[in-house]
Image (cartoon, rainbow, N blue to C red; front, side, top):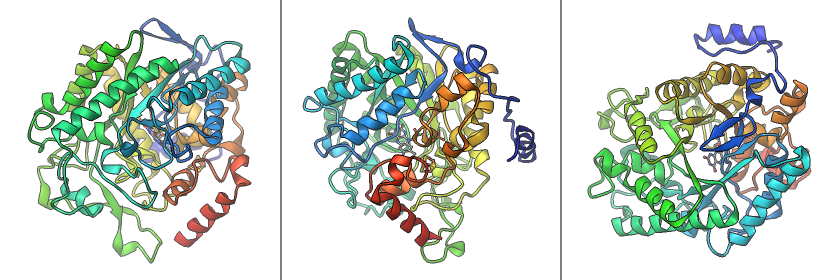
Length: 478
Ligand SMILES: Cc1cc2nc3c(=O)[nH]c(=O)nc-3n(C[C@H](O)[C@H](O)[C@H](O)COP(=O)(O)O)c2cc1C
Ligand code: SF4
């Protein structure tokens, strides 16, 4: 789109309520340049880097040089809030891939150095890191665990999900995680909190999003026993971890990344798919499972729409637990990626976008705004801005200025263009050659067993042989 007017026209034609400011403002006038106070810590600006899982750590869970490079990039981005860096698994069998970072006694020194490198890079680039807030994201991959071999899923599930079990070929007698095992997992999260504090992390995120274990607890309506059924039971996992970490640490803050809503799983339309070429996404058939009690923040009568009443209840609980940091995201990359990370080009195991991806951006921005309005004292990170591309800063400025969110998080955009926050705040311009075009290669590559990274736009990866493989895979899908 050639200018902001054309962008606005397009948004209007789609009937969306997004707005975009006329131009990119620099510091100190930009709303994105304003500091924000979180429980006594002054965060230097409103740009946040979202966590992005790596597929390139050592197999013992320690950071590799590729991981360190990515974290140094986060440090020089200019963003003042690094939300987790990337998901770190609390147990080897909890990894989403065999090269995911692990957080335990054996990786503590490596993680401490990783964090220090990020902070030191930031200090060198910006003169101080006193206003930089960095935390770790703690995860158990649950239903999407693939811990030991890239081609062998080893799901750990809390309840039978009529659609996801079918979609991911789980037999009817596939075992559920027992209550005893849940308690052991909780202990590992508490240990991980202790280790994070020793590493120097300012906070931990108890991940509750994207279909992973924490998120699955929230929709475990049909699970019997102390961890399923009632709202109180479905949030017991979260409460026990928070209480445990508070008892085991002295100064560590806690945040939650939450899929604030979820919708039905999708699949490529078989009528419109040809060979490996994917059709547009269509919802999975849910006619046999209505009312739909398998999604958190999903309208159970009409699961193609969201319903935020339980989400609001959860945020009330976070407030009771003295948690103020909330990173709002949605859905899952495994079964409805267009909800979670709007893109024009699907990953290899996805589907063609079933809607204009701007609708996906707007859906998350609107839900986040509704939550911000309802809970003004929460400090909220907004998600799903990368597809806005050339107009990302224009929309981000509007969203923060209008109080739709407190801060704006960057996911894919920062893999493609690490210094976007700095360039916009200092120069008021972006480098068009580095803008993420949502090619999804950073998802396709790892799903094909390759390392993490932006293969098309980051010159470092373009030189690697992996880039040619990603190209080949994509060509075969066309
Ligand atoms: C390669 C990749 C890895 C990701 N890994 C994580 C992760 O570890 N934890 C998490 O909460 N979200 C993860 N996400 C989701 C992003 O944080 C973000 O929510 C999503 O990409 C949408 O934001 P964007 O439009 O700015 O990309 C990942 C996304 C990508 C593309
Ligand atoms: S591969 Fe690069 S351009 Fe494509 S979605 Fe990922 S970050 Fe964006």
